[in-house]
Length: 268
Image 1 (spheres, rainbow, N blue to C red):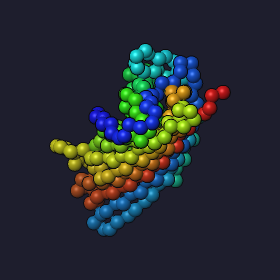
Image 2: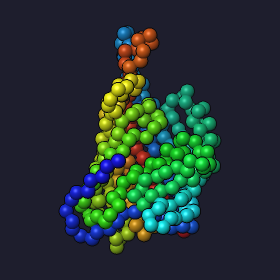
Image 3: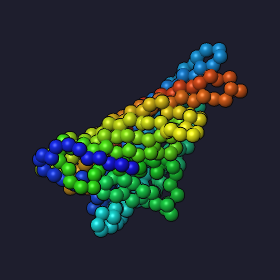
Image 4: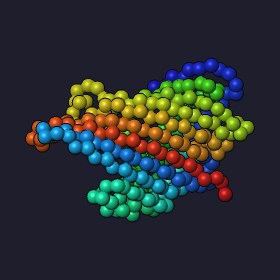
């Protein structure tokens, strides 16, 4: 991972951090909408299909411990309820089973002040789906103070798994910008725009190949609370699969559109 900070030094300099207070319970709601479109080419012509799906997840993150000197914070995430819906009739039974599996799941993780998340390797046996949702927060923030108007660049590998509709390899090249600071310096707005770049080298063109991908989003960081109050993300990914000749398929193009909105409830 690399980081580059650039921009004019003006206004108040602050250090953006994810560092919630021990004893807090952070109640979050995640809404996700997905649209997957596929175009299959065969020797007999073309066929297309589209699947719409959605997810609502209500969860809690209990702040258990915090290490000194920027060592990170340990949290226990508990999934209270999940609602999954899909336009694919054949996938509805699997969606209902996934709802039951994810409900009540617990996963312990550690978040660093810059927002990077590490799963507890010895932990609670959480399924991959829960781990992916917990890791939605990108490692975003510089370690030192920055001012409004500054931007920085990060590169990170695409997460493993099929959350974009297929197994993809590559990296995400993102530009972040510190847009504004409001509410007496407590609320920081950070925007991001990134491109997914396909893997290169031997074997990179086998299986499903990433053609292009774009990620845009905005994060609202509550500096006083040390957590993301709200975030919005939009993801568009295009990929192509070249099946073995024996299948009779020439190629399959797929496009996935995902929108995510996460918000954390106010303290009670």
